[in-house]
Length: 137
Image (cartoon, rainbow, N blue to C red; front, top):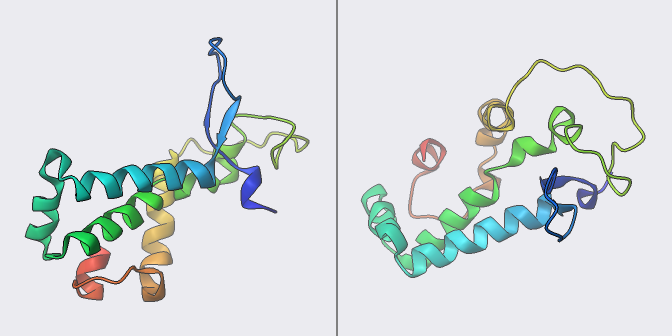
């Protein structure tokens, strides 16, 4: 399996041109880059909110926020989500559809984070926050 076979956004039903889908790995990085820019430029006073959380350094705050946003759609890697859109260039194109309980990709990502990823401090970005506080953020 390759991360280049998972979609993050699709153009189902849209007829105004463009690509059929946007790869999940690129979507995650795009969102993270926008979040980084938002902190650096203090859009919506987000830098102020991160300072209230205890991250005083703007660059560190921008990296931390970008890291959080990069993980925001981790649940989209789930087979139940990936089978919602099929394209011949993607992993599950030839696989038969499976019946899954209807669980949103956000819930799947939250379950993954709570059950495993939050216990891996090596995944956390450098931060002035304690590991405990980083998990809560």
